[in-house]
Amino acid sequence: MKRKITIMMLAAAMLCLLPYSQLEVHAEDFAGNESYYDSICRQSNKDAKTSAMCDRYQVYLSKKKEALRGQVAGIRSSVAQLQGNIDALQTEINKNQNLIDQLEAQIAENEAAILQIQGVIEQLQIDIKQTEADIELRDRQIKDRMVSEQASIGTNAYVEFVMGAKDLIDMVRIVDGISRITENDQDEIEALEADKAKLDQQKKEQERLKSDQEKAKKDNEESKAVAEQAKASQEELKNEYLRQEADLIQQMRSAQSAQQAVQSQIASIQNADLNFTASNGFIVPVQSGYRSAGTWAYPGGGFHAGRDFAASIGTPIYAPIGGVIVYANNPVPTTNGFLGNWVGYPAGGGNTVHMIGTVNGTTYAISFFHMAQESFLVSPGMAVSQGQQIGAVGHTGNSTGPHCHVEVFNLGNMSVQTAVAQFSASGADFAWGCGWNTSSTSCASRGAPCRERPENFFG
Ligand SMILES: [Zn+2]
Image 1 (cartoon, rainbow, N blue to C red):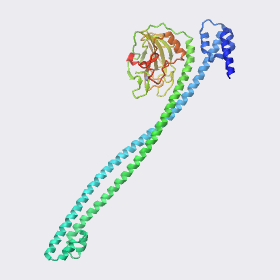
Image 2 (cartoon, rainbow, N blue to C red):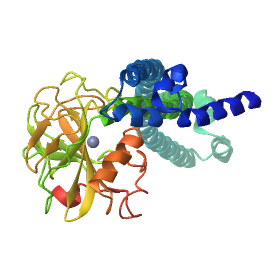
Image 3 (cartoon, protein in one colour):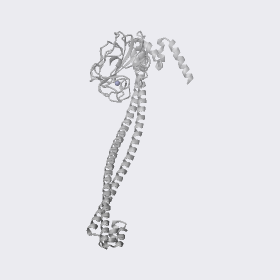
Image 4 (cartoon, rainbow, N blue to C red):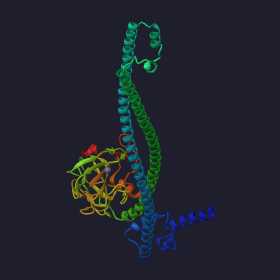
């Protein structure tokens, strides 16, 4: 393997020394030598053989582009599958949340019932105490009366007999035969005892109801704990899927970036028009509607790399500065946007434009995402002046509603010509090496190239 590589390297070295006319022999060496072939094919005065070779080079580039497109489509379908899993999990999570809500309502009902029953029991206890006091009172009254009656009869043995009874019932039983207690006394005492027994029975029943409610509450609390546990593991799995999805999207971005590298190699054969008027400041690119999200975070959380201008579809988008368009592609229908729709370049951008220009000697690159397919007024390589309409607001790619997402990059004192060349060489890296997931590359944190807050330039 190593030997083969050495031979290939030698062949490549020799290739550089050969005149163009010999190149067709090595036409299969395009891979890995693109910049070399680009430089040859970019020249305007080519002989017939070189032209034929450049035609084959174009075919090679197209095939490479197709392969990358396939790769991107593959990743896209994996992402769609993951999103299906995430949606299914979300449904389960919602179900569990509903169950938890229901159980919480039931627990609250149990608690209210327990409280209410407790009140009834307390009232019953008061009634029982009152009845006991009534019984005691009657007991004493009857005893006293009997004692005083006995005093008039004058038999001490009977007094001891009555006073020795352990309670009123006992006494009633003992004195019954002696007929010293009236029918009325007996009825009254029996009625009081019956009242007390009834109250005791009611209290027992209420205590049973209370214990039933307490058991139901405990069961509901256990079910709730189970549902919460299930929901927590589903959330965990969902987060894992979201991480996988983020990884795949990252992969897709690089694949698309590679795909775009090929397109830009083709585009870079054209010479960009750098005859634009430099600007003294920025103007607002979308002049109606409202700002729906700012950098670096969405209102609901999550990293947000730019400024969102929410406006109705078709609202004009103007070049905020004079400059040159380095990317302009509108493959997507105007209203195809939805959350997680990764069409367009960069992934999810839908219809996009990227431009480079200067303001007071500093070079800036500016991105416009989610644009309409119609009124798409620019093409790669075209010079634009400040305030010139470049396109219109759409709802394309990873978008929840009509808006234009704008990002601004500070490229420092890099010349526009160098910036255009670097954009092309990077394979159209819209992020200028600043990445997509962090504010650590903001101009507040580091020097150019860095991400600017568009708010600082156009509110
Ligand atoms: Zn945005």
